[in-house]
Image 1 (spheres, helix red, strand yellow):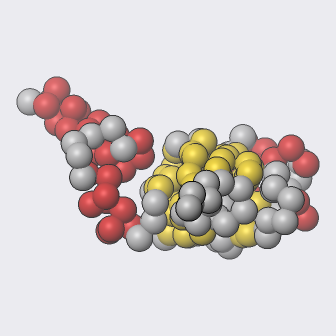
Image 2 (spheres, helix red, strand yellow):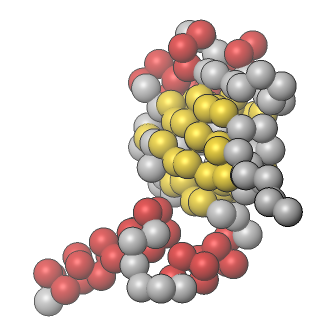
Amino acid sequence: MRYAIGMCMCAVTLVLVEGCARPGAVEEAQKTLNADVLVRMSGVSFVPKHVTIKAGQSVEWNNTAALETHTVTADPELAKTSTSVALPAGAATFNSGDLKPGQTFRYVFTVPGTYRYFCIPHERMGMIGEVEVVAVPAAQP
């Protein structure tokens, strides 16, 4: 029985985080979240640490920690180390502010490129993530 429960929990994680599940499962999760990709914040980690989306899509971060407050921050002015943040040319900075356990932050990415973001209280502990935004090809006539 323990084995079955463990497998079930893994399947749920894959559906929400990596999309490796039955057809339609990811779409169902996204309707609930109103986002294209979900990133969990737990302990001092973003899970998954790197995601790839298309320009115009959104990412939702969910603080699943029991006690910790987290942020989702891509603002060089707020970083302790310059390597903790990167933005493509022309992209705006963003900062979720403090997210208590159970709270979420959603951001729509419109400028293609790589965004490196961090958690303000846990930056020095390595809580850094990346969103790679790929351009959507123009429609051919």
